[in-house]
Length: 325
Image 1 (cartoon, rainbow, N blue to C red):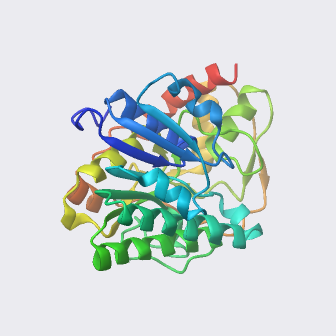
Image 2: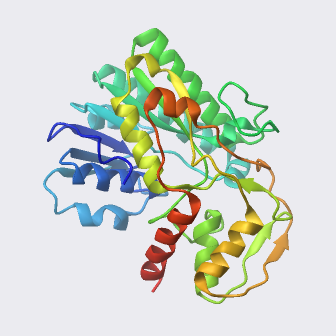
Image 3: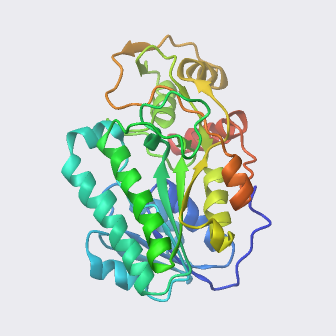
């Protein structure tokens, strides 16, 4: 693991909002393993109770079923917390195009509720999930903070708004906020089901079950696929970062670039199958190419990802083989 050097005082209270989701549950697990006290807030709209059920036996873990759209719930959850890791949001670009009002409520107002509750409760650090989607129609590669284009989906707009609130809360109120622009995170506990499932778990499930996946577009889109343990490291390093690094957004990727069709071929090879994919129309609102310049996160957060795609996908495949039976 790339975060073995990071330590917190035993019993340090963390609130992980969205803690029953893919990224959130992995954060809960890592923090419990470090001896921290973990409070998980989730309304289970996209998170899964089964993701946190194994932690319920741990006396240092508390599950709160609640909605970040309710400010009183946010205040109760933030009480006495030293660090807040806000992963609570609705993902998926296509779904945001279908439901822009809901995305406004959850991803903007909900995040603002969490930020304000953290401020009022005297939280030391507020680390929140942003997204590489904020780069929008920018064609520059690699993607660099400060070189964003025009956003092309409601989801991307919600994350851009969150970053602006993060900046303001540092400048106006002194709350140390750190926005993490995740680049195509994958790994254990990522949901392979549903029409909005992320591409890697979806393809893995289909290939393991003898089905033929469909690639949206020509397969020449590129992504900076980022293994979950890199994201855990980024969140923990942000908690340890200097206050002078707060109020900013950071690219959190592996620093690589892989074409979708090449990723698909690697999955087939790793699984020992030969399946020619179907090709469908491109998805509205999708960024064509994605590759993170992670130099700012390295410099100011000490982020140093140790999992490239090959290492991460091997671990992910092992997990899905067991999970999917």
